[in-house]
Length: 156
Image (cartoon, rainbow, N blue to C red; front, side):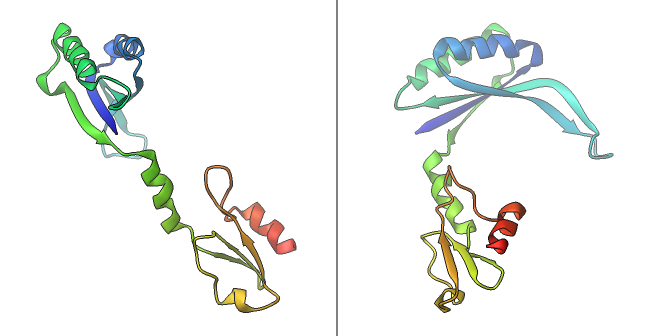
């Protein structure tokens, strides 16, 4: 299981905290905090803070040791007590399986159907003239929805 540790810090402490993550062997990423001023789509104001997120494998790493190092960092720089938040991080397998519910058969023209193997045959497929392209739209292949792909299929 993965744990996510979010640390809100002044932006000038971003590099030292990312250095700590590197020293601990933890994957980390950061994003500046912004506030929407509500005037227009580009009217965001940087708050001066950055959120640095550590992704910790509870199987491969000592979570308590990492949390202790983060707390030491927070104390050393006299940051707020609520600067650190932890949460469970979703496992990659979940999204890799859950995306299947959104991929449905695609009809191209009158006689081509592109569908994933987990979907049942469509009514159109019962026609002998229909060509079926079974594609597993995982990490390596697309879904057949891109316009260029659809045009090429239509030409076939």
